[in-house]
Amino acid sequence: MRFGVCTQSAPKVVAGGIVLNENANLSGSSQRAKFPPSLRLLRHSDFERVYKQGRRHFAAHMTVFYLPRAEATTLRVGFTVGRVLGGAVERNRMKRRLREAVRLQRPQNFAGMHVVINPKKSLLKAEFTDIQQEIAKAFAVIQKGSKS
Image (tube, rainbow, N blue to C red; front, side, top):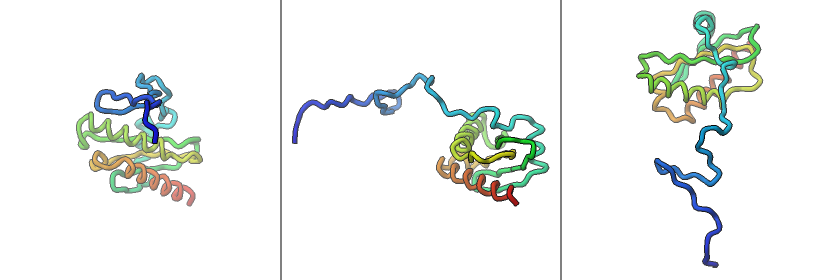
């Protein structure tokens, strides 16, 4: 056993007790994963069409509405979080968590579908892995339903 000076640099501790390595970038200017507007459902008329003409999939923490669109070339996803689910901070947190789960679980070969995700209050306390699993299962159900 050899005793001596360690050649590795010490980890950097910042506010909140977060431990970072020497290559960590805190500026926020590094490449970020995005969910661009071209993949989102934005118009009120699109949401209404999905609600009225589409189908539903119920899950523990959300209800997923979906509608196959022949003229659409990509999967477009929208989120509706009503005021009954909490204040602005809680609603925005729900939307951020859902956006990230959709970004991570979104199938690449999925075209011509509009999807609206309506969370339930339980989403706030759910583990992120549970949310991801529900999103993945919803996409699998949607794919299966769109082929029939």
